[in-house]
Image (cartoon, rainbow, N blue to C red; front, side):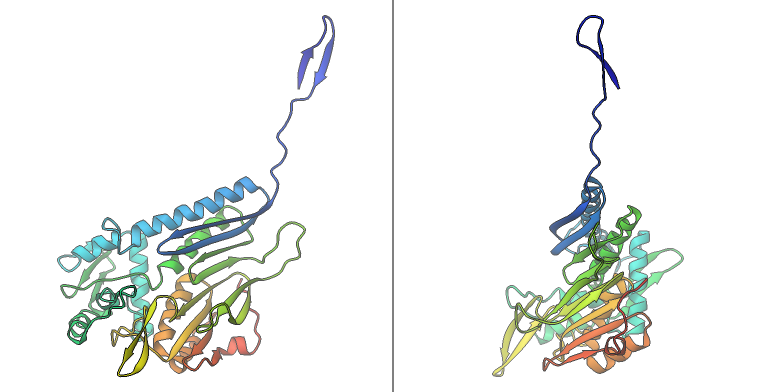
Length: 341
């Protein structure tokens, strides 16, 4: 407090002005990163702290993009693709973990998930409506095979078994990004949030601010063929959810009078787009699992894909097949709660 003199011999007691406590509220932020729409929405008792947390999420997304983008020549992924056919390439701890997890997924799914699919994937141009011809596809398929990715777990290096091989982490890099982002938010004390990167989302807690009734977050599964419509709405708490659909990057081609959709989800075994499924949505405890499993189930199809989901604890699935019929894992069919603690 201050004593301010107004007249000679007179003193007045003034209280120094203190800043009012920052108000709590919802913070939302959107950016285009990693070739997709990034969205963060969170509640924080201090708006300034919440805005800083949302900014930190975007900074982390940019960092992951700089590291894992196949389009940035100075990314770690690009460095691996340039050199790993010539010699073992040292990996950062983060990249080592992702490649190790990718190989585990390849073994679990009999190759339905395979980051070496990139040798084929790079030949597709969906904007130009171009796909590889028969000879191009045959040559590229010879460069696909997760067993040819030699990961030295002691030296933490990766070497390609054949010249011309490439890897792409697009199969679960966004899931990894939302995992990292939500961990960052938790460390900052955020207890109610959603982070989304395209079709991959992860939610923290329920959707409730001060004075608001707690209610689950909701994620809609869009209709794969009717834009603006949904086939299901999922109430979620503390869970990751990923959707892979044939409507994300695609073009329709006519072959022998039959219209065929050419899309970005590639079967590593054939080098072509599977057509027995329109979309797959996976619920899991973490984004790496949900995104990788959504890609694998899409390739495996309804029967084999759901059988894989049923063997895994803590996962559920919703699949829309090529006829538009909805299929769900037993956990969802039995009305089990979707909250994961």
